[in-house]
Every structure is written in structure tokens, then in C-alpha cells.
Amino acid sequence: MKAVQVTGYGGLEQLEVVDKEIPQPKENEVLVQVRACAINNTEIWMREGAYGTGGKSGWRPEGVQFPRVPGSDITGKIAVVGKNVDEGRIGEDVVLFPFTSTGEEGKEHISEDMSFIGSEYDGGYAEYVVWPAELCDPMPLSSYEESAVFSVSGMTAWHMVEQTKVKPGETIMVTGANGGVGSLNVQIASKAFGANVIALVGDLSLEEKMKELGATHVLSYKSNQLTEEILEANGGPIDAVLDVVGDALFHTSLQVLKKGGRFCTSGSAGGQKTELDFRTLYLKHITLIGSVLGTRAEFKRLMDSVAKGDIKPVIERTFPLQEAREAQKYFKEAGKLGKIVLLPEHNA
Image (cartoon, rainbow, N blue to C red; front, side):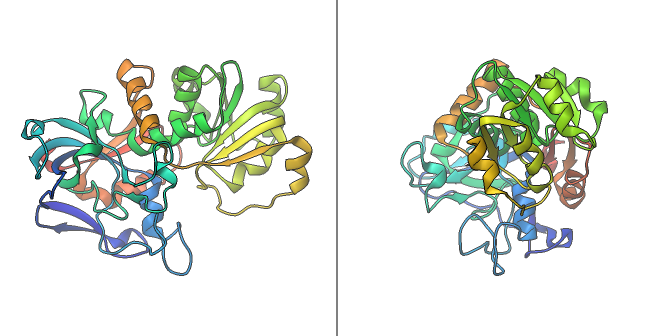
């Protein structure tokens, strides 16, 4: 099969197209023919070494074992089943829950042994992937590429909204609102939880599209009067921030939060380190929430919402699998709306 491997920490040159043996499923596993794999920040940060220190980076302390096939937002068709798996599942269209864990229900994502597909296991930048049968769920939509855009970014966004305890009628600010997680934060907070959403983007030509996703107000983070514009749009301080940017908008976010406000972060595309005056936290009674991934139950609630049509797929562009370098380069460019999806050749 064709696959794309990361050969070590570094730039795009570390992505190589290779021929590999098709893996075989072991007991309780299935072989999935990959039909679509959406790109996430997680595999880019994994390649760049942004998750760790001391030369190691990954979801586990020991770092990634190279070469590794990345990719975690995966849909496909079950082609072969391993021992103890019902043969009737062959031909089933599935979306893959993206990590294994022995954590108790509701805490799977914070278990010490949580291991991620595309980081601790070979992932979806390939024509086939092996995965536990119990972690292969029915696709929420009939399209492979549309169903592939929710697994990691969608679960991350859903978990952020639940962790932040968003309530109907509250005003929530979403940073990076045109990105994969951000665009889903806008939809989930507004359409599934009934909040008013202020969406921050770089390009205001996206305003109408963001409002279609559920944003009440759309503002440019490039504005020199951003704080004033946020407060004016809401008629005062806001209830919560769902952030994937980090340092670049951290100070502004704390300024516009009301007393008792909540700041939830799940990314740092605009800077991984910041300065914090602790007085801002305790004098305003602000709650800081670190959030990543989510639980099996949240994943199922997300997929139910997608299947009902409450949450829509937003796809910027697709690339052939063998153009993974170009796809990751395009992913990091500003001004996009939604997800970038890789399609193996057998989709043609």
C-alpha cells in the first residue's frame, strides 16, 4: 500500500511517500481501507516536535517512535476482521475514535496510557490502517470525506464547550474561528448549546460564512481596537472564551471576560508561552481550563449531533494522499475556512 511516513522531527522534508506492507488485524482488531483522512494541527506539531521538550515529542513521555504514519481523522470501509470480530462487519463504513486508553468512563482522555493514532500508532496517511473493532463507529454522514472532519477537532471542540459549561444565551468568544476546531466551536456553542458567539478571524471576507455557521458577530483579530469592538458587540464583558490561538489573543481574552468568566484553551497556534499577571485572575475570579480531546460519550454525542444535521462539515480543500507535504503546507496558511482532507488513490 501507499503511505506517508514521518521520518523524524523537523520540517516538511520529514514527510515521505513509501510503499508498505498492508498491516494485518490481530485479535479484536479490523483492517480499514482508508477513504479519507483530515489534517489536524496534532500531526504537524508532532512532526515539528512542539509537544515536548528534551528532544522528545508526542502524546506519551517517551516521544514518537519513527518512522510513523500520521493521521487521526479517519473514515473508511472495514476490509478484514481479526479473531473474535464478527465477520458481518466486513464492508461497514466507519469513523475511527482516535485513541486507546484503559481510563475509566469519562476519564479516558486523561489516562496515563492514552495513546493516539498517528502518534503512538500508525494512522490514516495510508491506504489501510489497523484499529480496535470496538473503536470503529458508524459514519454519521454518507460521505467519507465529510464524515472525516469531526473525529479529533470535533471531539476537541465539543469537549471544550462542555468543559466550559456553556449555557443558552451566554456570549462566547471563539478565537481562530475559521480553523478546523474554531469553526466547530462556533457551530457547537451556537447550534447545540444555544450561545451567542463572537467569532474572531483574520479575514472579514469570511463574515457571512461564519454567520452561516452560527456566529452572532464576526470581528478581525487584526483590529487595533479589538478589545473595544468585542465589548461593544456584546454590550459589555463576555461570559467565556474558547481559544486555540494562545499568546497572541490571551491578554485581550482576559480583558474582555466578565467577573467569574471562563477561559478554555486547546491550542497555541499564535504562541505557546505568554505573560500572566495573576491579579487579573483572582480579582476577576476567572477560571482557566486546559482542554484536549474528549471522552467516548462526548464523541457519541457529537456524532449524534452531526447525524441529525445540527453540526455541518466545513471543508476548505482536498488533496491526494501523495501530496501530503503540499496539504500540510497549505494547512498552515492563513485565511482558510474549515478542514483540509487527504484522499487515498482508491477514492478516485
